[in-house]
View 1 (cartoon, one colour):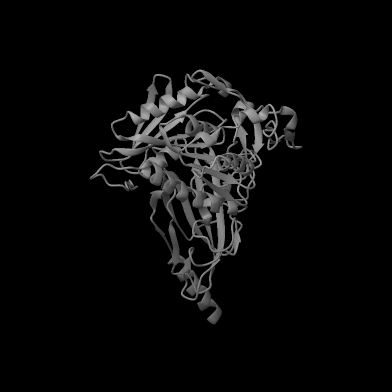
View 2: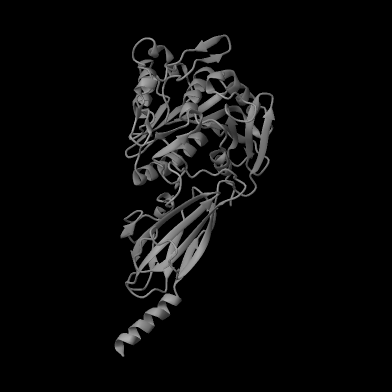
Length: 444
Protein backbone atom coordinates (compact mmCIF):
# COMPACT_ATOMS: atom_id res chain seq x y z
CA UNK A 1 0.00 0.00 0.00
CA UNK A 2 2.89 2.35 0.83
CA UNK A 3 4.45 1.69 -2.60
CA UNK A 4 1.14 2.46 -4.34
CA UNK A 5 0.79 5.66 -2.29
CA UNK A 6 4.27 6.78 -3.41
CA UNK A 7 3.38 6.14 -7.02
CA UNK A 8 0.14 8.10 -6.66
CA UNK A 9 1.98 10.98 -4.99
CA UNK A 10 4.52 11.08 -7.81
CA UNK A 11 1.78 11.09 -10.43
CA UNK A 12 0.07 13.97 -8.66
CA UNK A 13 3.32 15.97 -8.49
CA UNK A 14 4.10 15.18 -12.14
CA UNK A 15 0.70 16.49 -13.22
CA UNK A 16 1.27 19.67 -11.21
CA UNK A 17 4.72 20.41 -12.65
CA UNK A 18 5.15 24.00 -13.83
CA UNK A 19 7.61 25.35 -16.37
CA UNK A 20 8.38 29.03 -15.82
CA UNK A 21 10.22 31.14 -18.39
CA UNK A 22 11.14 34.83 -18.03
CA UNK A 23 11.09 36.61 -20.37
CA UNK A 24 9.13 34.47 -22.80
CA UNK A 25 9.58 37.14 -25.49
CA UNK A 26 13.05 38.63 -25.83
CA UNK A 27 15.81 39.67 -28.17
CA UNK A 28 18.10 36.81 -29.19
CA UNK A 29 21.01 38.23 -27.19
CA UNK A 30 19.05 38.31 -23.92
CA UNK A 31 19.36 35.65 -21.24
CA UNK A 32 16.28 33.74 -20.14
CA UNK A 33 15.49 32.43 -16.64
CA UNK A 34 14.05 28.91 -16.78
CA UNK A 35 12.66 27.26 -13.67
CA UNK A 36 10.69 24.07 -13.09
CA UNK A 37 8.49 23.85 -10.00
CA UNK A 38 6.18 21.37 -8.27
CA UNK A 39 8.22 18.27 -9.03
CA UNK A 40 8.80 15.47 -6.55
CA UNK A 41 11.93 15.90 -4.44
CA UNK A 42 14.98 14.73 -6.42
CA UNK A 43 12.84 13.76 -9.40
CA UNK A 44 14.86 13.15 -12.60
CA UNK A 45 13.57 15.17 -15.57
CA UNK A 46 14.56 16.08 -19.11
CA UNK A 47 14.13 19.53 -20.62
CA UNK A 48 13.93 19.61 -24.40
CA UNK A 49 14.11 22.58 -26.77
CA UNK A 50 12.90 22.41 -30.38
CA UNK A 51 13.07 25.10 -33.05
CA UNK A 52 11.77 25.04 -36.61
CA UNK A 53 12.86 27.67 -39.12
CA UNK A 54 11.49 26.99 -42.59
CA UNK A 55 12.48 23.43 -43.46
CA UNK A 56 15.25 23.38 -40.85
CA UNK A 57 14.68 21.64 -37.51
CA UNK A 58 16.93 22.00 -34.47
CA UNK A 59 16.74 20.50 -31.01
CA UNK A 60 18.61 20.22 -27.72
CA UNK A 61 17.99 18.61 -24.34
CA UNK A 62 19.39 18.36 -20.84
CA UNK A 63 18.97 16.06 -17.86
CA UNK A 64 18.31 17.51 -14.40
CA UNK A 65 17.46 16.29 -10.93
CA UNK A 66 15.09 18.36 -8.83
CA UNK A 67 16.28 19.64 -5.48
CA UNK A 68 14.68 18.69 -2.18
CA UNK A 69 11.94 21.27 -2.77
CA UNK A 70 11.05 19.78 -6.17
CA UNK A 71 12.60 22.66 -8.16
CA UNK A 72 15.06 22.93 -11.04
CA UNK A 73 16.67 26.31 -11.68
CA UNK A 74 18.81 26.22 -14.82
CA UNK A 75 21.00 29.09 -13.70
CA UNK A 76 21.93 27.30 -10.46
CA UNK A 77 21.74 23.55 -11.04
CA UNK A 78 23.93 21.49 -13.37
CA UNK A 79 22.74 19.62 -16.43
CA UNK A 80 23.77 16.01 -15.81
CA UNK A 81 23.69 14.98 -19.45
CA UNK A 82 22.28 15.86 -22.84
CA UNK A 83 23.59 18.22 -25.51
CA UNK A 84 25.53 20.09 -22.80
CA UNK A 85 26.48 19.54 -19.16
CA UNK A 86 27.14 21.72 -16.15
CA UNK A 87 25.50 24.91 -14.92
CA UNK A 88 24.53 26.98 -17.95
CA UNK A 89 21.42 29.12 -18.01
CA UNK A 90 21.45 29.32 -21.83
CA UNK A 91 22.76 25.85 -22.63
CA UNK A 92 19.51 24.72 -24.26
CA UNK A 93 19.87 27.60 -26.74
CA UNK A 94 23.50 27.44 -27.84
CA UNK A 95 23.59 23.62 -27.86
CA UNK A 96 20.76 23.32 -30.39
CA UNK A 97 21.78 20.98 -33.19
CA UNK A 98 20.15 19.86 -36.43
CA UNK A 99 17.57 17.12 -35.91
CA UNK A 100 18.39 13.74 -37.45
CA UNK A 101 17.75 13.55 -41.17
CA UNK A 102 18.66 17.19 -41.88
CA UNK A 103 21.10 18.07 -44.63
CA UNK A 104 24.75 18.42 -43.54
CA UNK A 105 26.22 21.77 -42.64
CA UNK A 106 22.91 23.23 -41.51
CA UNK A 107 23.36 26.74 -40.12
CA UNK A 108 20.68 28.49 -38.10
CA UNK A 109 20.22 31.93 -39.68
CA UNK A 110 17.12 34.13 -39.62
CA UNK A 111 15.94 34.96 -43.12
CA UNK A 112 12.93 37.07 -42.16
CA UNK A 113 13.62 39.30 -39.18
CA UNK A 114 9.99 40.46 -39.06
CA UNK A 115 9.22 37.12 -37.39
CA UNK A 116 10.86 35.58 -34.32
CA UNK A 117 12.51 32.24 -33.80
CA UNK A 118 9.89 30.13 -32.02
CA UNK A 119 11.47 27.81 -29.49
CA UNK A 120 9.28 25.13 -27.94
CA UNK A 121 10.43 24.04 -24.50
CA UNK A 122 9.04 20.83 -22.99
CA UNK A 123 9.49 18.97 -19.70
CA UNK A 124 9.66 15.16 -19.56
CA UNK A 125 9.75 12.71 -16.68
CA UNK A 126 13.01 10.78 -16.30
CA UNK A 127 16.30 11.08 -18.16
CA UNK A 128 15.60 10.56 -21.86
CA UNK A 129 17.62 10.78 -25.03
CA UNK A 130 15.29 13.39 -26.46
CA UNK A 131 16.94 13.31 -29.88
CA UNK A 132 16.51 9.54 -30.24
CA UNK A 133 13.04 9.73 -28.65
CA UNK A 134 11.67 13.06 -29.91
CA UNK A 135 7.95 12.32 -29.48
CA UNK A 136 7.88 11.34 -25.81
CA UNK A 137 4.83 12.75 -23.99
CA UNK A 138 5.57 15.97 -22.11
CA UNK A 139 4.56 16.82 -18.56
CA UNK A 140 4.20 20.45 -19.60
CA UNK A 141 5.49 22.79 -22.29
CA UNK A 142 5.76 26.44 -23.26
CA UNK A 143 6.87 28.54 -26.22
CA UNK A 144 9.50 31.30 -26.34
CA UNK A 145 9.90 34.06 -28.92
CA UNK A 146 13.45 35.08 -29.81
CA UNK A 147 13.66 38.27 -31.86
CA UNK A 148 16.36 40.08 -33.82
CA UNK A 149 14.02 42.99 -34.48
CA UNK A 150 13.08 44.96 -31.37
CA UNK A 151 9.80 46.80 -30.93
CA UNK A 152 9.64 49.97 -32.94
CA UNK A 153 12.72 49.21 -35.08
CA UNK A 154 12.01 50.13 -38.69
CA UNK A 155 13.37 48.14 -41.64
CA UNK A 156 13.71 50.11 -44.90
CA UNK A 157 14.83 48.24 -48.05
CA UNK A 158 17.68 50.04 -49.80
CA UNK A 159 17.89 50.49 -53.59
CA UNK A 160 19.74 53.77 -53.92
CA UNK A 161 22.10 54.12 -56.89
CA UNK A 162 24.35 51.05 -56.72
CA UNK A 163 23.58 50.36 -53.07
CA UNK A 164 21.55 47.32 -52.08
CA UNK A 165 20.58 46.15 -48.62
CA UNK A 166 18.35 47.40 -45.80
CA UNK A 167 18.49 50.23 -43.29
CA UNK A 168 17.34 49.55 -39.74
CA UNK A 169 16.36 52.55 -37.62
CA UNK A 170 15.76 52.44 -33.86
CA UNK A 171 12.54 54.06 -32.64
CA UNK A 172 12.67 57.76 -31.87
CA UNK A 173 13.90 60.91 -33.54
CA UNK A 174 17.61 60.28 -33.23
CA UNK A 175 20.11 61.05 -34.48
CA UNK A 176 21.57 57.60 -33.83
CA UNK A 177 25.12 56.31 -34.21
CA UNK A 178 25.48 54.77 -37.68
CA UNK A 179 26.92 51.35 -38.47
CA UNK A 180 27.47 49.45 -41.72
CA UNK A 181 27.16 45.68 -41.24
CA UNK A 182 28.31 43.02 -43.72
CA UNK A 183 29.07 39.34 -44.12
CA UNK A 184 31.55 37.53 -46.33
CA UNK A 185 32.33 35.47 -49.39
CA UNK A 186 29.11 33.44 -49.37
CA UNK A 187 27.47 36.48 -50.96
CA UNK A 188 23.77 37.26 -50.98
CA UNK A 189 22.26 39.25 -48.14
CA UNK A 190 21.75 38.52 -44.45
CA UNK A 191 20.35 41.24 -42.20
CA UNK A 192 19.73 39.55 -38.84
CA UNK A 193 22.78 41.05 -37.15
CA UNK A 194 21.89 44.46 -38.59
CA UNK A 195 18.42 44.17 -37.05
CA UNK A 196 19.93 43.26 -33.69
CA UNK A 197 22.40 46.17 -33.81
CA UNK A 198 19.47 48.50 -34.48
CA UNK A 199 17.62 46.91 -31.58
CA UNK A 200 20.59 47.98 -29.45
CA UNK A 201 20.40 51.58 -30.58
CA UNK A 202 22.43 51.82 -33.81
CA UNK A 203 21.10 53.04 -37.16
CA UNK A 204 22.41 50.06 -39.08
CA UNK A 205 22.86 49.63 -42.81
CA UNK A 206 22.92 45.94 -43.65
CA UNK A 207 24.88 46.06 -46.89
CA UNK A 208 25.02 43.45 -49.65
CA UNK A 209 27.96 43.67 -52.06
CA UNK A 210 27.71 40.72 -54.44
CA UNK A 211 25.40 37.86 -55.36
CA UNK A 212 22.25 39.80 -54.54
CA UNK A 213 19.64 41.35 -56.83
CA UNK A 214 21.49 43.25 -59.59
CA UNK A 215 24.85 43.40 -57.81
CA UNK A 216 27.86 41.63 -59.36
CA UNK A 217 27.66 37.85 -59.26
CA UNK A 218 31.28 37.45 -58.21
CA UNK A 219 33.25 39.28 -55.54
CA UNK A 220 36.08 39.79 -58.03
CA UNK A 221 33.91 42.54 -59.53
CA UNK A 222 33.54 44.69 -56.41
CA UNK A 223 35.34 47.97 -55.68
CA UNK A 224 36.03 49.83 -52.45
CA UNK A 225 34.28 52.95 -53.77
CA UNK A 226 30.97 51.09 -53.36
CA UNK A 227 31.50 50.96 -49.61
CA UNK A 228 32.47 54.62 -49.46
CA UNK A 229 29.23 55.44 -51.26
CA UNK A 230 27.42 53.45 -48.57
CA UNK A 231 29.22 55.35 -45.79
CA UNK A 232 28.37 58.71 -47.37
CA UNK A 233 24.75 57.68 -47.86
CA UNK A 234 24.39 56.57 -44.25
CA UNK A 235 26.03 59.72 -42.90
CA UNK A 236 23.67 61.88 -44.95
CA UNK A 237 20.58 60.34 -43.38
CA UNK A 238 18.80 62.79 -41.05
CA UNK A 239 18.47 60.21 -38.30
CA UNK A 240 22.16 59.31 -38.30
CA UNK A 241 24.89 61.15 -36.41
CA UNK A 242 27.03 62.87 -39.01
CA UNK A 243 30.53 62.69 -37.48
CA UNK A 244 31.41 59.15 -38.61
CA UNK A 245 30.22 55.54 -38.75
CA UNK A 246 31.17 52.16 -37.45
CA UNK A 247 31.82 49.26 -39.82
CA UNK A 248 31.35 45.60 -38.85
CA UNK A 249 32.36 42.79 -41.17
CA UNK A 250 32.79 39.03 -40.97
CA UNK A 251 35.31 37.05 -43.03
CA UNK A 252 35.71 38.71 -46.47
CA UNK A 253 33.83 41.75 -45.16
CA UNK A 254 36.39 41.93 -42.34
CA UNK A 255 39.03 42.70 -44.97
CA UNK A 256 36.76 45.37 -46.39
CA UNK A 257 36.19 47.13 -43.06
CA UNK A 258 39.95 47.17 -42.46
CA UNK A 259 40.40 48.82 -45.85
CA UNK A 260 37.60 51.27 -45.05
CA UNK A 261 39.30 52.15 -41.77
CA UNK A 262 42.57 52.66 -43.64
CA UNK A 263 41.36 54.86 -46.48
CA UNK A 264 38.08 56.51 -45.42
CA UNK A 265 37.77 59.41 -43.00
CA UNK A 266 34.07 58.58 -42.64
CA UNK A 267 34.88 55.50 -40.53
CA UNK A 268 35.16 56.09 -36.78
CA UNK A 269 35.50 52.46 -35.70
CA UNK A 270 35.92 49.10 -37.41
CA UNK A 271 35.23 45.54 -36.24
CA UNK A 272 36.87 42.77 -38.28
CA UNK A 273 35.54 39.33 -37.34
CA UNK A 274 37.31 36.14 -38.48
CA UNK A 275 39.18 37.79 -41.34
CA UNK A 276 42.44 37.96 -43.22
CA UNK A 277 44.77 40.94 -42.80
CA UNK A 278 45.25 41.15 -46.57
CA UNK A 279 42.99 41.67 -49.55
CA UNK A 280 42.24 38.15 -50.76
CA UNK A 281 40.98 36.45 -53.90
CA UNK A 282 40.84 39.45 -56.27
CA UNK A 283 42.32 42.98 -56.48
CA UNK A 284 40.17 45.71 -54.98
CA UNK A 285 39.93 48.95 -57.01
CA UNK A 286 39.59 52.24 -55.14
CA UNK A 287 39.54 55.65 -56.82
CA UNK A 288 42.66 55.87 -58.99
CA UNK A 289 44.46 52.86 -57.49
CA UNK A 290 44.02 49.11 -57.18
CA UNK A 291 44.74 47.29 -53.92
CA UNK A 292 46.60 44.09 -54.86
CA UNK A 293 45.41 40.73 -53.61
CA UNK A 294 46.83 37.54 -52.18
CA UNK A 295 45.57 34.65 -54.26
CA UNK A 296 43.52 31.72 -53.07
CA UNK A 297 45.63 28.67 -53.90
CA UNK A 298 43.40 25.81 -55.01
CA UNK A 299 46.21 23.27 -54.62
CA UNK A 300 46.37 24.08 -50.88
CA UNK A 301 42.75 23.09 -50.22
CA UNK A 302 42.50 19.71 -48.51
CA UNK A 303 39.40 17.60 -49.15
CA UNK A 304 38.31 14.91 -46.71
CA UNK A 305 36.82 11.58 -47.74
CA UNK A 306 33.31 12.99 -47.32
CA UNK A 307 34.13 15.80 -49.75
CA UNK A 308 34.38 18.60 -47.19
CA UNK A 309 37.07 21.25 -47.70
CA UNK A 310 39.70 22.47 -45.25
CA UNK A 311 40.71 25.86 -46.66
CA UNK A 312 42.82 27.02 -43.72
CA UNK A 313 46.01 27.22 -45.80
CA UNK A 314 44.55 28.35 -49.10
CA UNK A 315 45.81 31.93 -49.01
CA UNK A 316 49.07 32.85 -50.66
CA UNK A 317 51.95 33.59 -48.27
CA UNK A 318 51.65 37.21 -47.10
CA UNK A 319 55.17 37.43 -45.66
CA UNK A 320 56.97 37.33 -49.02
CA UNK A 321 56.50 38.75 -52.52
CA UNK A 322 53.98 39.04 -54.06
CA UNK A 323 51.53 38.26 -51.23
CA UNK A 324 53.06 40.79 -48.84
CA UNK A 325 51.88 43.59 -51.13
CA UNK A 326 48.27 42.60 -50.43
CA UNK A 327 48.51 43.33 -46.70
CA UNK A 328 46.08 46.07 -45.74
CA UNK A 329 48.00 49.13 -44.56
CA UNK A 330 46.11 49.45 -41.30
CA UNK A 331 49.04 51.36 -39.85
CA UNK A 332 47.70 54.35 -41.80
CA UNK A 333 44.42 54.24 -39.89
CA UNK A 334 43.72 56.52 -36.95
CA UNK A 335 40.33 55.02 -36.09
CA UNK A 336 40.04 52.21 -33.55
CA UNK A 337 40.02 48.70 -35.04
CA UNK A 338 38.79 45.65 -33.15
CA UNK A 339 39.85 42.20 -34.32
CA UNK A 340 37.69 39.25 -33.22
CA UNK A 341 39.37 35.89 -33.77
CA UNK A 342 38.78 32.25 -32.91
CA UNK A 343 41.81 30.15 -32.07
CA UNK A 344 40.20 27.10 -33.69
CA UNK A 345 39.13 28.81 -36.92
CA UNK A 346 40.05 26.34 -39.68
CA UNK A 347 38.54 28.50 -42.40
CA UNK A 348 40.86 31.47 -41.91
CA UNK A 349 43.85 31.49 -39.50
CA UNK A 350 42.47 34.75 -38.18
CA UNK A 351 44.49 34.95 -34.94
CA UNK A 352 47.64 34.87 -37.06
CA UNK A 353 46.26 37.54 -39.38
CA UNK A 354 45.04 39.76 -36.55
CA UNK A 355 48.49 39.63 -35.00
CA UNK A 356 50.06 40.47 -38.37
CA UNK A 357 47.86 43.56 -38.68
CA UNK A 358 48.55 44.60 -35.09
CA UNK A 359 52.31 44.16 -35.64
CA UNK A 360 52.13 46.64 -38.54
CA UNK A 361 50.29 49.10 -36.31
CA UNK A 362 52.75 48.67 -33.43
CA UNK A 363 55.70 49.14 -35.77
CA UNK A 364 54.32 52.58 -36.62
CA UNK A 365 53.66 53.56 -33.01
CA UNK A 366 49.91 52.98 -33.25
CA UNK A 367 47.83 51.82 -30.28
CA UNK A 368 44.35 52.05 -31.84
CA UNK A 369 43.77 48.29 -31.91
CA UNK A 370 41.95 45.72 -29.79
CA UNK A 371 42.26 41.95 -30.15
CA UNK A 372 39.64 39.55 -28.84
CA UNK A 373 40.89 35.97 -29.25
CA UNK A 374 39.01 32.95 -28.03
CA UNK A 375 39.95 29.29 -27.48
CA UNK A 376 37.69 26.58 -28.85
CA UNK A 377 36.16 29.08 -31.26
CA UNK A 378 35.67 28.62 -34.99
CA UNK A 379 35.01 30.87 -37.95
CA UNK A 380 31.30 31.64 -37.68
CA UNK A 381 31.19 34.00 -34.69
CA UNK A 382 27.58 35.13 -34.44
CA UNK A 383 25.43 36.99 -31.89
CA UNK A 384 25.02 35.25 -28.52
CA UNK A 385 23.37 31.84 -28.14
CA UNK A 386 23.47 31.07 -31.87
CA UNK A 387 24.18 27.32 -32.21
CA UNK A 388 27.70 26.41 -33.20
CA UNK A 389 28.16 25.38 -36.84
CA UNK A 390 31.35 23.39 -37.45
CA UNK A 391 31.05 23.27 -41.23
CA UNK A 392 28.77 24.94 -43.74
CA UNK A 393 27.89 25.06 -47.41
CA UNK A 394 29.60 27.79 -49.44
CA UNK A 395 27.19 28.63 -52.31
CA UNK A 396 29.52 30.50 -54.70
CA UNK A 397 32.01 27.62 -54.72
CA UNK A 398 29.44 24.88 -54.15
CA UNK A 399 31.46 23.06 -51.51
CA UNK A 400 31.13 22.26 -47.82
CA UNK A 401 33.79 24.11 -45.81
CA UNK A 402 35.07 23.39 -42.31
CA UNK A 403 34.68 26.28 -39.86
CA UNK A 404 36.21 24.81 -36.70
CA UNK A 405 35.39 25.37 -33.06
CA UNK A 406 33.57 23.37 -30.41
CA UNK A 407 30.10 24.24 -29.09
CA UNK A 408 30.79 25.34 -25.51
CA UNK A 409 33.89 27.42 -26.21
CA UNK A 410 32.29 28.94 -29.28
CA UNK A 411 29.19 29.88 -27.29
CA UNK A 412 31.28 31.59 -24.63
CA UNK A 413 33.13 33.57 -27.31
CA UNK A 414 29.92 34.72 -28.96
CA UNK A 415 28.47 36.01 -25.71
CA UNK A 416 31.65 37.77 -24.64
CA UNK A 417 32.52 39.27 -28.03
CA UNK A 418 29.02 40.62 -28.69
CA UNK A 419 28.97 42.60 -25.44
CA UNK A 420 32.43 43.99 -26.21
CA UNK A 421 31.53 44.85 -29.81
CA UNK A 422 28.50 46.83 -28.63
CA UNK A 423 30.60 48.63 -26.01
CA UNK A 424 33.34 49.37 -28.57
CA UNK A 425 30.85 50.85 -31.03
CA UNK A 426 29.11 52.93 -28.37
CA UNK A 427 32.40 54.32 -27.15
CA UNK A 428 33.80 55.21 -30.56
CA UNK A 429 30.76 55.95 -32.73
CA UNK A 430 28.01 57.24 -30.45
CA UNK A 431 28.36 61.00 -29.87
CA UNK A 432 24.83 62.16 -29.04
CA UNK A 433 23.84 65.77 -29.37
CA UNK A 434 22.89 67.72 -26.28
CA UNK A 435 19.54 66.55 -24.98
CA UNK A 436 19.63 63.23 -26.84
CA UNK A 437 19.66 60.03 -24.75
CA UNK A 438 22.95 58.16 -25.19
CA UNK A 439 21.64 54.65 -24.58
CA UNK A 440 18.71 53.90 -26.86
CA UNK A 441 17.67 50.30 -26.50
CA UNK A 442 14.40 49.30 -28.12
CA UNK A 443 12.47 46.65 -26.25
CA UNK A 444 10.86 43.52 -27.59
